[in-house]
Structure formats: C-alpha cells, structure tokens
Image 1 (tube, helix red, strand yellow):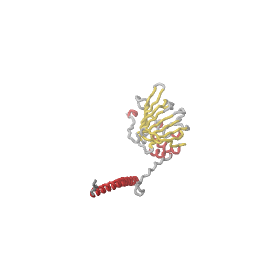
Image 2 (image 1 turned 45 degrees about the vertical axis):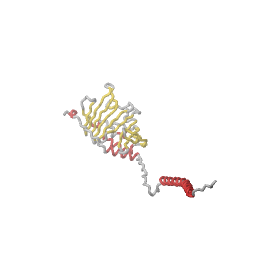
Image 3 (image 1 turned 180 degrees about the horizontal axis):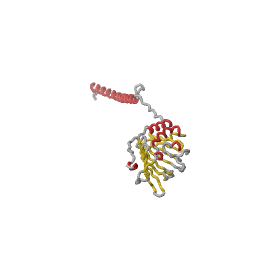
Image 4 (image 1 turned 120 degrees about the vertical axis):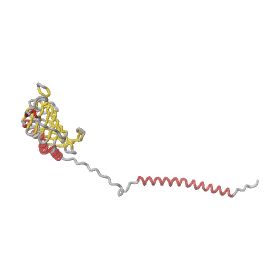
Amino acid sequence: MPEIQEDPSIQKDDEVMLSTALIRGLLAPALITAFMLLVAACQEEESAPTPASTMAPTATPVPTPTPSVDELLTAVGSSIANMSSAKFGMIEETGTGALFFGTTFKSMEAEVETPDKVKMQVEVETPNFGFVQIGIIEVGDRAVLRFSKDAPWTSLPPDQVPFEFAGMGVVFTNLPNAIRDAALTGREELRGAQAVIVEGVIDSGDLLPLITSANPGHPIALTLWIDESEALLRQIRLAGQIYDDDGPETTRLLTIENINVPVDIELPASAFGS
C-alpha cells in the first residue's frame, strides 16, 4: 500500500490552530483573573475611607444648657412685669374652696390690661340660688360689682377687689427669694407647647400682692409650668390653704393665656348714674 504523504500546509495549519487554542486557553483564565483583580481594586478604592484632611468637617451638636431655677424664675418675673395684657382662668380643683363674698368659690375668668384694668367673672355656689356669676370691673381707682349677670352694677371700693393681678409682677419678682426647696421636676406638653415644670413651697402671705385677702402662715405647694423658650408662665397650681377657712386639701389651678393680646376694659356708665 502506498504511503500517504501529509500535506505540509495542512500540518502547519493544524499547528497554528493548536497553538491558537492553547494561547486562548491560557489567556482566558488570565484575563478573567486580571478582570477580577481590577474589579476588586476598584471596590477597595471606592470603599477606602476618605483621608481626614479631605473630609468635610462634621458639626458637633451643642447641648442646650438647662437654666437654674433662680435664672428661670428671674426671667419669668421679668416677662410678667413687662406683660401688657393677658387672660386668666382659675378653678378650685377639690371642691373645698374658701368663701367669696359670703359664697363658695368655684371658678374665675379674668382679663387684665396693665397697669390698672381688670375685668372678671367669678362663679360661686350659694345655698339659696345655686351657681351664680359675680362680675367685677376695676379701672384705675374705681371698681364696680354685680352679684349676677342680670343685676345692676354697684360701686365697690378698690381695696375690696379680691384679686389684684397687677401684683403678679411683684409676686414673681420676689419668688426666687420666697420659694423653698425649688426644683426643676420635668417637662410636659401644655396646650400644644412644651413647658418646664418647677415645684417648691411658699407661704400664703407671699401671695398678698396678688390675692389681697390671703391669710399668712399657711404653706402652699407651688407648681409652675413655664414656656422655657420665652420665659412665659403658662399655668400655676396652688395646693394648700390661702385663707384660714380653706380646707387643708384645697387646690387652685390658675391658667394664663393670650399674653400681650389687646383687650378692651371699660367701666359701665350705668354704675355711676350716666
């Protein structure tokens, strides 16, 4: 049988193809490995922390300092002394209120315009007529009173007006020296705003500039709700005897609203025959 001679060109082509295949086989893993190394390097570069010298400075929050009780009460006294007008409400929380013009005090609403205008409605309970509203208006050195909303106004000596709201500035200016065991005891949301709570003890006689017929000598547990941002007094609780005929458990809650909102307080002309 004749010997088959291979075509040298075919052998050469086979060698080239084999060589190419080997090169590709070797390069493919190498390329994959190089690609993976490149990806890893990029990831490391992205995750590497930025040098401190190139980072934007981070602002350190500065805590708001809590004022001392004396600082807070002094600021409140100043804000009350500068108050031009306000609306007050007071209720007797325990039902053991003192006598008020011979009746039992229940609640009060009042508008005040400094320096010397007050208009108040006081709800009292009487043995014969039940609940009655007593009205009092004071302007300067004149005051009037009526014992029900349908009764005529009659003249009232100013020194017999039971509440002298202009005296609040005096009470709270003196409060840092008058209050005992004063402490900040917490915070509470009050009528939609945050208030800081201050508690302490005062003598009932310290209230005389505000409550003109208070009897001295009784300890009063005092709680104040203060809008710290503006040093505005929002609410006061007075727990204890203000008058001698109060029950020991008597508690009055005084609210303060509409601070520096203008009001119109005038004496009724009918009270003076004109």
